[in-house]
Image (cartoon, rainbow, N blue to C red):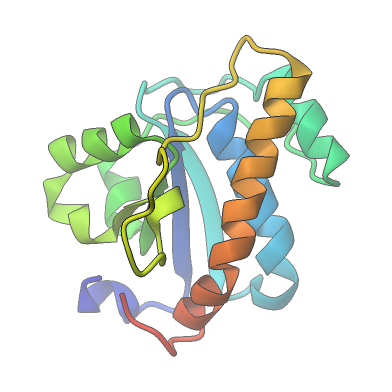
Length: 171
């Protein structure tokens, strides 16, 4: 993480998937629910997509499974990933390996801030697949599995995120 970034008062986290209509809006909503009560003035959480799609809503199934978790993403509108988003973010979480590779290819100057969600803060290589499947066009059962997988990872990394936001830990 560059020192210039850490001089600002707001810690910015961005989740990246393909179209910014399923996985990343669900991750954004979940993490906001987890952190905003304690860190609303210290953290901003966003999401975007590598396909460059702008202003589309989250899918109906994403909205529905998020609602089951007490999260309202019905006003979400997709945003394509931009250089500005890469530059401002302290942490960028790729939800699949292809998103991670995309960011390393097109934004190599920000590679120190880009992580696969499932490999962040593990302390070692994890022995399973690191991508979270894209549920678009799938059943509610698949969407539930995906949001539960994202939630499990966010719960796992929450203590690390809180230490980073509090400035007690550096990447």
